[in-house]
Image (cartoon, rainbow, N blue to C red):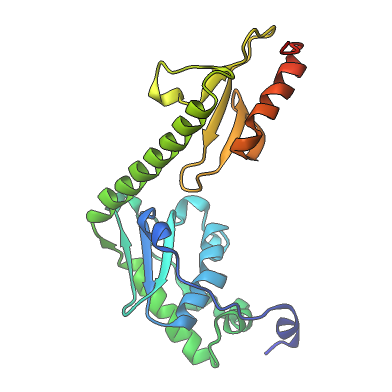
Length: 233
């Protein structure tokens, strides 16, 4: 093994995706061995996504919105056949170039073990299992997160209902507001990130404050009024 690889690379023990990551994923990878999961997470998924493997392109990458978990079998499940991309990666034929690094990052001791592991993953890629329940599970998760986000925004609006002029006409622009007695017409919006439940402040499509704290909103409005040329008195 090339000594440079030992110095520059090391195995990272990876962990399974969270329950929410699985629920939101249209492509779900299950592997029955920690070394296989480390090989996937540390090496192969990055090679595919970067378009490096066999001169593939990003449009060849099968594994978008992917969760990876440790389980009892080796399989790839997708929500529909339309989610499948390229299935013909000849992984183990590339090992002469990257096998030392791949062995270190996955923990396989011998080239034979690594080849066998690559064949397992290659077979999974070639034969993904379509499970139509995934689509409804993903949509259910999205609706759940959207509902949480709306409830958070409604709470912010209720807490500061008289501080600014909230636009309550349509649900899709919930959180949008104008400053009271503005001099320059600017539409601001408090946005809640679906899945993270963090708030941000936007002006048009531009985010001007990330990870906004609800308690800071009055001071933020005061600053916006000052910038607008309105003192608030």
